[in-house]
Length: 282
Image (cartoon, rainbow, N blue to C red; front, side, top):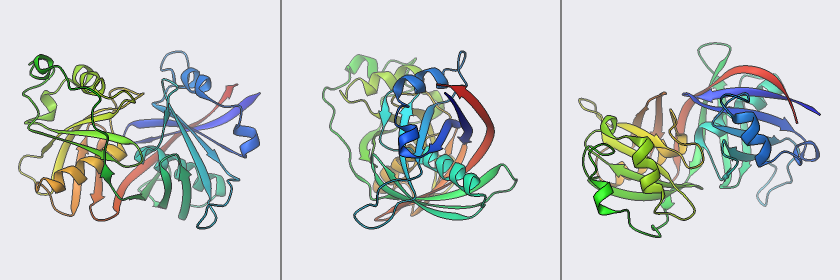
């Protein structure tokens, strides 16, 4: 069987999107994600998004889509702030509209996404109600103290740490300069303290800017990525709690910037770009 996928990215965090009825998507699973997301032997992406177009009605009303996200390594993720924007974008294209409000069921809970036209035909802007932030998990073991201060991986020991649950888990590390953190080494080191894994973000206030953060990223199941929407939201929430930023925060990542509104419910604002449509064999 052949499937038609669309490829999108949110600030360089790229996804393959497959939309369809539950019966059609049921056979698609981790093995497909590993094969299709491979950078050299597949299409290439950070993850595979499945959007069920005939989801069951939720307790509080109808749902437009049900989202399942598989990381590039085949593991299942509860939520993705960039991914859900890409999924909503794909659904808008499927419906032939440029403006739409969607209710999307995810493994991390129900999310609403408002899609509006972007600066060019391939781009949309999307605002995601990320829900409330909750305390994240405690580590199952503490990182080795010697590795924490290893200068190759860390410019210095993190100044503060916090875990945040946004439907998926995040560890936010306040550092002197995220550009000096080797996320390829520091990310796995910190993630190893959590048996279920965790997304790791090194952040600092952006020099010369107000309500502005710079962030380096290590994502559970995907590795170093150019952007992380849930991570940016977690970073803004943590930094706000530390008194470093106000209620509306710009988060700068290697792939670009998002804005986060901090409150009882957090709002994530960012783009999705449609790259291509591809056909793949099951």
